[in-house]
Image (cartoon, rainbow, N blue to C red; front, side, top):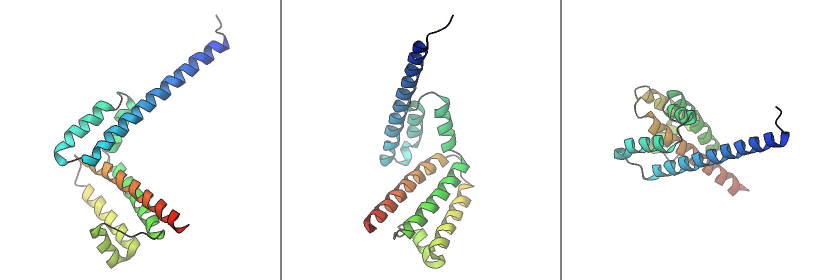
Length: 158
């Protein structure tokens, strides 16, 4: 029995629309959960993680996201991205606002101070395992902030 091509097309379009709607819902739920981070405190840590666990769809994507967020390789990747965005901000005319890193940049230069701070962060991370996902979420925010600063500095020049 052959299925007419128009019926196949309707089924495919329906499946694609359902997948798009499902993805949109998952993204909006993730945004809502991540917006809660602005009012985050240490006592709310377990409730935040359980909220992320509850609100993300029960799929392999959710498991992969939560698992990836809690890995050391994610931390190292985020450190590299922070380093690159910080150096881009320096090049665009920005300066370091973290007092510890700012003092390192005075003693070791801009690049040397930031690289040294990243090496210290990675060494400290080697002793931490349980709460790494919180630090990774924080660095995602730092990287986003760095990108905003770079864009603002570039636009201000022109």
